[in-house]
Length: 373
Image (cartoon, rainbow, N blue to C red):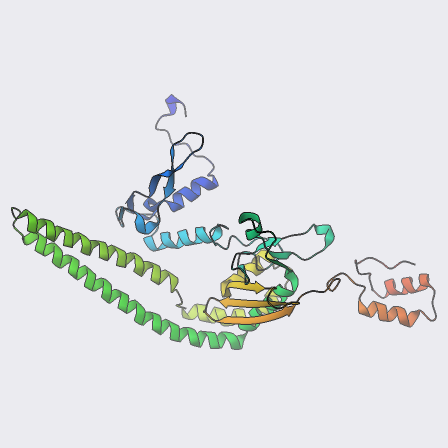
């Protein structure tokens, strides 16, 4: 900006980093903070020798004053945004954003053998091979001699999708909604307990303040002790408020009547929606993530088989197993109906006539091409 433009508002196209900095800034939610970043002497830049800044966890911020000024979003919305940003980031155990790859468990699949997160290995499009789930963090990062395990994604995805569609069938949804009603009642009781704890903590903080206000200022020892107790009560109130917000966020199992009705309708149409050509792999992944928290795969414990553990958001765990693919099992093959028709025609027709007949009847080769002699 030139000197003559000082104080002038200039609009620019936002960058990703600028948007993320705004969303992560507590001031956006009307909060004042101090000490979000710390500088440690044990972490320095190799070039400049300066101490590097590290973001402190929210519970360790020295100062956090909510509702300090009008915010663009509420504090609850701010916390939900932070969780969404963390999940969208593929590192630190986050799921990452659902992408267009064919492996449907991208971001939610874990190794049932070593416990690490599994990655996806895609193959060249011309190979027409299914993607692969692979556990190689130990080999790449920890110096282990070999990768932990690997398996083709197609049979695993097929089993998980079948379990998903069965779980969200109309009957399954009806049972889930009934269970959800019971869970909602339990959560309401839990919420009341949190509110009682907060009410008691705030009362004790107000009582400590009244005692401090009533003491003779000249009695410095007593005043200092009462001030310490007051600060301790205020700290406890702040900790309880943060814990309450986190607990409320993690326990968001409440459904409105409209959501329940939509859930029933979706259950009836979901299978058709899943099979539709217009449904993209990313959309299928998003549907799976609505119901499934994580999937663990173990292809080591039982040779020739893959043990699958599906952990649903409801807390229920489903155990499955599928056979490992045999060489050539999923390779492209001439349709069985075409092979049978060839056997029927072979006794009376030449190769050229058989190919012409097959093409006329709509049959195609394994690669989708016309038959030739």
